[in-house]
Amino acid sequence: MALRTPVIAGNWKMNTDIESDLELARGILEQSDAVIGVEKIVCPPFVALASVSELLRGSSIHVGAQNVSANENGAYTGEISAAMLKGLTSHVIVGHSERRALYGETSGDVTAKAAAAVSSGLRPILCVGEALEVRQAGNAESFVADQLESSLAGYSDWDALIVAYEPVWAIGTGEAATSDQAQEMTAVCRGVIQNLAAGAADSVRVLYGGSVNSGNIAELLEQSDIDGALVGEASLKADEFSRLIAAAGTV
Image (tube, rainbow, N blue to C red):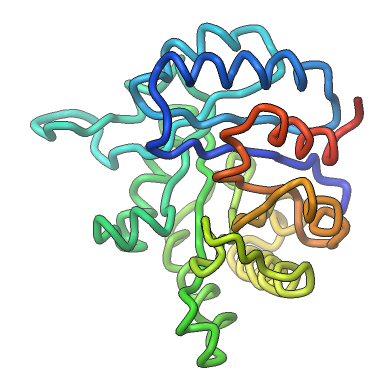
């Protein structure tokens, strides 16, 4: 990891209710608020954003959303715009593989969502990653490079951007990429940014995600192009998530 401030972000997905969200946030706050040298983000479900945001207000822990609409307003039942999130969150996940696979989101959709986020002052955490069959065919690097490049078409607010490389075959499976594989692919992501905006390549944080835990975080953070982690299952346990934060920062 270079001189970029590391990021540990937790994606709680659809696993909690408001009561358990608050309990989890409170536990992370108690254990990790004093840790410095790392950007800490939790991403609860939409229904808990207001409660968690209020609990963490004034702390060192940021709140992010798990999704955002590309549209500003209008007849889009069930959608949440970036303007609605402003004041509740500082970050928002876009392009997660589950959104791409389950809801048919394209890289064009991701581009539009990232643009909507930055227009309201939010920082997008833009996800890319390959499926197992793509990796087995030897096409992981070209697939992820193409996916990231197309997801960033026309994008320009590089100071706000965080990229997360999450191999689909490692998400929630318990099978993490090796540190060498993760470094190889995050370097590919940084190379894409270099080609799109040379001056941003050294400053944009690139995270790894996929079965990250306290047993592998240290080795991952030793890699030159890995600037932290987007964490799923391990972020649902305050003790474990706080261990990841401690590994990336200074107590």
